[in-house]
Length: 184
Length: 184
Image (cartoon, rainbow over all chains, first blue to last red):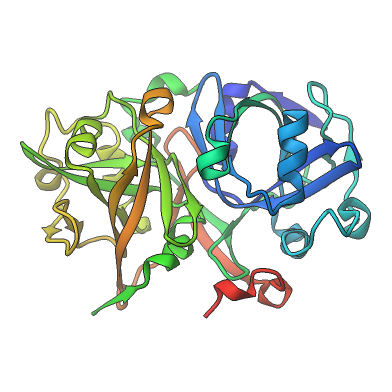
């Protein structure tokens, strides 16, 4: 049912800019937030940057635990994703409220989300940019992808609660002369 | 033909993770590169982070000039975008080779690209992260959007020259209770 990708394949999931969920394990249990401010920083080791302000309940858990999971939702989860991004883990048990199922990760204490098509386990690699920009540098330690999920279209936040859904794919592989070494 | 958005609306163009072009003006003329490693950092003033390695000809121009333009292409430009990302401005005049038309920006010396649906003029706001991560923090100073362009679908790089094209839009505005202040 699941396959594992090498961490260096994180960019195939994240570079296209999907809205993602981010889970943490804190002293008060699991939490999950919605995240649109993230990018790839490096292919290998796979580094991801994300901006999480101190007004987010997850900020503290991420600083204290140094671990999280980036979970990639598909379009059938758009309402949950939006509502998760509009309430706080300080007030609500978001897993229970939004019907998400947590399952144990392998390399971190933060949970995977069963409903998501992909889960990337991450460890905080650098907190030096938290002070100026609320930016965490994460290293991806393990990737699990749901192979048999029917709905596979990711969503991209265009602002104000409008999400663009994945449409067609355009294949420009024949023009990837310089970056061929990344393929396999 | 064009409209100008306030800089604080940059996230409506960039948060959804489109592949973008980035232009610079250097001592040897204009250059353009393809960029997938970028994210929003802050809504207002609008800050954008991007990762541009020193192996890119644009890296030096960006450091020296402190200015660039982020140009947002649509799906009809997918082949040019890919080919621009697979050659170097050191060897090729990319504007001429790929039939792009440069036009003057208002707040920076780097050029706009006429063929792109949106052009965001940017000034480098912080180079402290260039050393560890090749990361530039940019502040958006002006946004021009082509109002009457027919093809409006952006493309998202899913790796290895495969691009996902914008599909349907899902409207979750009614659930944006917390972030309503961003809307107008």
